[in-house]
Length: 213
Length: 232
View (cartoon, each protein chain N blue to C red):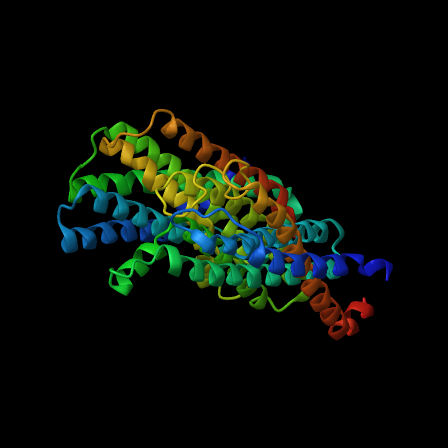
């Protein structure tokens, strides 16, 4: 919990990084608007999730890369690795939720609101944002141990995240009033939740091995 | 001689697969006709790939439990043979598809596009990409112990993320590829009894061949790396 507060405090102090990501979201959506204007439903959906993916990578890549060696060593002495990784996961999920809100608001403001049921879409986007941030937190932890971290994260991350992204894009078509066979939607939501839970469990088990240097 | 019984079994099974696979009678389906014999090769490659990747992950778990560098070498070699099997799976699949899917009336690239977009192919591509990424990750960490540890963690994590999705996603998306409702060829209803007689031995045979190749590569690696393995 303290560690979570530390990340939060650090974020408040290093506001330039946070604003950098915010600006990244805003400029991406603005460029999309200039290039496309109001788009069709499918394009809107695809663009939204692609933006979401890249925002997530940008926001979360720094969560491990910003920690210097000395500071990691300090954390090593004061806390248990599972607690540390849980704090990171929690913090990144929250960060992603904020960015998610912003992304959604900007998309609706600039590119119009094609959804039939906006609340459903908000729910799905938060579910997706959570999943993305969990996966990339773990991958950032892995990539931070190697050289050329930023590009490596993309290489490691994309094949792992594609299935989840496919499911999300498919699922979010519900909010565009596409009809599904009964039960499929609940199945997919449950599947995504199970995946998220699995990632948390795996992170807690595997992170201690990454930790000791 | 005692240890090599499975190698003999492998050779026997593969000879049987090739002979029986090409000679035994098969049901004549309208679309597939004789190309169905490719089942003994194409599907077995994917089975062997998945089994080899699974063995690799098991060795990664073992490495994390014991921190014995030999286990890391095992995991790496099984993964690379798995990739080989996956590539062979693509090759045999391409041959099969060129007789069953590719429509001669279509311009070549249009039907190529529809083949590339197959969810099953995308799933297989993701499996291969993950293991390519695994090797990129390995090569980007100079320190031996750290490389072994980090890549073992990635191996387990990626495997756990990948396999649920490989089995679930193709069933949610429309596809030309057979096996939508379950695992192709494992379902007792869609495979003929005569074919099962060849198919199951073929899976075992190809998997054993994969393991055999891997053990030779492992022995080679252990010999070349003997210096630092013994120095510990």
